Amino acid sequence: MRARAVLALSLAAFLAGPPAAAAAKDDLKLALKEKVIRDLGSAGLVLAFHVAVENGAASGFELVRYRYRVRINQVEYLNMAVTLDEPLEVPAGRETLVALPVKVSYDHLRAAVGPVEGQALCDVVGDMFFRSERGREQRAPFAFSGEFPIFRDPEVDIQPLKVVDLTVGGADVVFRPRFKNFNGYELIVDVLEFELYFAGRQVLAGPVPGDKSLPRMGEKTFSLPFLLDFFEAGEEVREAFGKEEFPCRFTGRIEIASVWGRLHIRFDKTQALRLEKADGP
Image 1 (cartoon, rainbow, N blue to C red):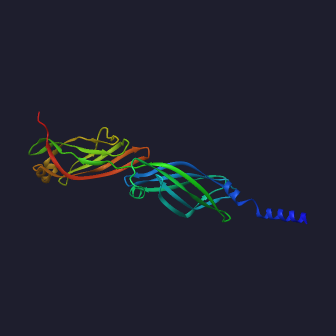
Image 2: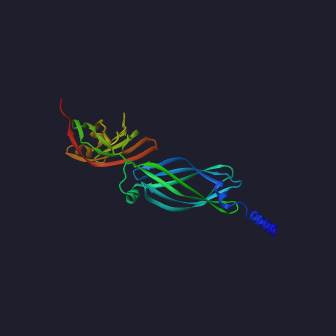
Image 3: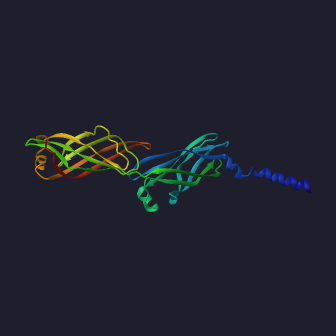
């Protein structure tokens, strides 16, 4: 009887196979490779966690869904589950890179967390779910963290137009736009291109020369001298110089080099432009 009982237990263990939990622990391993910030702008950004999935099993898996909870500065920001439209292949004996993106809207962030300045800390905790070739589902937990910046676009205003000389046929003027940087780091500006309109007519366009970088929590005023021909500019512009101020539009783009990639920013400022006579000799 005893021999029969031992045989029965051995047969049951053979039919059951190895413990499922132990096999699941060894099959798939997740490791954070890098954190990448994309689409950074004044509205928000995408913080992408690039995760390496190592499949140590003898057969392939598919990533079919994942769920995660996002906390920013220790306050819950997002809690969601995602099912992939098309499963991602995770072949056997290989490492597969998976991107786990977290889209951050500054408006949503401030509503959920409160005022945030400078930078914030993001913690992501969740599970990835994989399906084996036999249709069995396996769960792999993860927990990652990373910092991201709170970025603000530079703001622009326009100083009074300095009039060096004014004649019947034209004017010698200096246009002075001022850019303000509200970020706690310098903005390395590679390109600053603009178009300038007086009284609805374009009077100047092109790149701003020289050093264009903006100091941290500071500002910079650019001086753009040029000669204005009233015959070419039109009657509206000539008449505008007979007034104390007239409509001005200053529009263009800024290209910034940063550790998060190149930032492309548009600006468009319209305001009344006052005239200021230059000091005489």
